[in-house]
Length: 116
Image 1 (cartoon, rainbow, N blue to C red):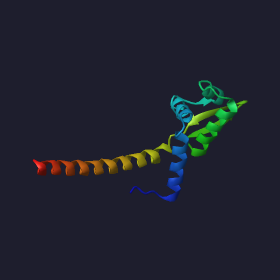
Image 2 (image 1 turned 180 degrees about the vertical axis):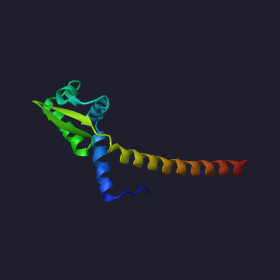
Image 3 (image 1 turned 135 degrees about the vertical axis):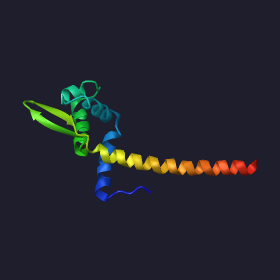
Image 4 (image 1 turned 90 degrees about the horizontal axis):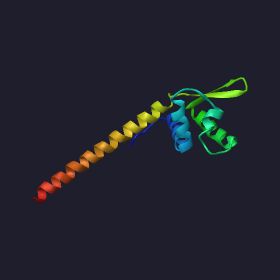
């Protein structure tokens, strides 16, 4: 079983919760190209601005996005650091399942050879 420290688990939960929604993933993808205002980020999404702002708040709470007030608008930037633990968890889990599937494959090949 893949284990992490409780604080890391909370951070992973927040990151995965933030990325569980298609709109928020699209915002993260857009911010990979550079900072943008809330209005720019909301433009391609067919929803009211207050609803969209809840998505931005979730991304900020997860630590994936940082905002800065500039004049009357708020500019959002991507903070990629929280993705590293999530990537590490995925990598460890992938390696675990690959090892299990390799063992299953070897078992099935041995069983097949035994039948022949």
